[in-house]
Image 1: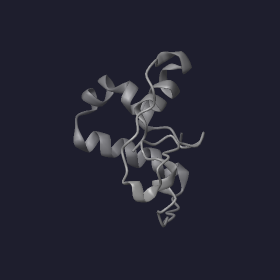
Image 2 (image 1 turned 180 degrees about the horizontal axis):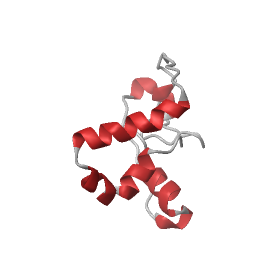
Image 3 (image 1 turned 90 degrees about the vertical axis):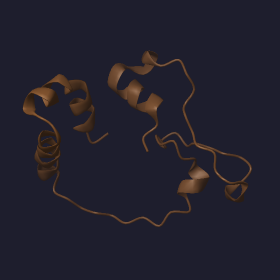
Length: 95
């Protein structure tokens, strides 16, 4: 759901992307004007996100990274995970 150009800017710097942010088309029932607020770093427009009913799952931050790393290891080998270090670095942020 993260907007690809926002991820690239975060990881490689503000000047790393020249293309416009990506967005998905939503039905007109969400409004004729599609907007993205400054903090909305998803491909989904604000009007669509405002219709969601959120559920908050609280997990201790110290447990998130080891668990995520173990998932990477379970899905592949340690050597393969090391080769994918940029992807791992991006996944291991709370951004």
